[in-house]
Image (cartoon, rainbow, N blue to C red):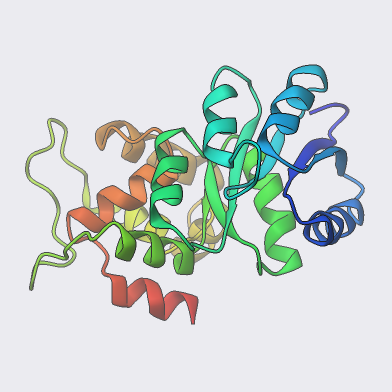
Length: 229
């Protein structure tokens, strides 16, 4: 971040979508949209010549789609958030495999968009409960019947009850700040627990941790839907 300002790149083939996102982000003094691109190829070129902190990347685009662009930008330090309507689960899974730092639906509320950009710029990942539920449904992950909220026993270093609690809240889409408020603990304590959760579950980021939580029955699809309603 330059002088505390988050630099953003917007990538979407729909001009009105880009204009709307740009208007929302430009309303904040600590966020600047440095460039816009209409397809993945243009995004790769601009990202290599004009460094940004965060790239909001549409998945389905002409010329070069978002997945291919993410693949080309794997060595770029910018953190990428996939923009999607979940029309194709293959695209969503592909974005996850290419290291997307999270997912935002295109109808995301302005406040949530702003918070997401700031969160990702600070090195965290973002994924809404609604997006998580839809992603998991498309991936056809089956919930273990009658075994929700159980601590996995096959970890080399098992999760503590507090770490399990943190993981469940992460899976429900809560930010570090929200977790601190819910559990009445400090932000440094939350960050320490989150770091341990990621390490113990071999998750590179919060998105991977959400998948881990779902696979092991720590949180159910029904709970995620309830959180997003």
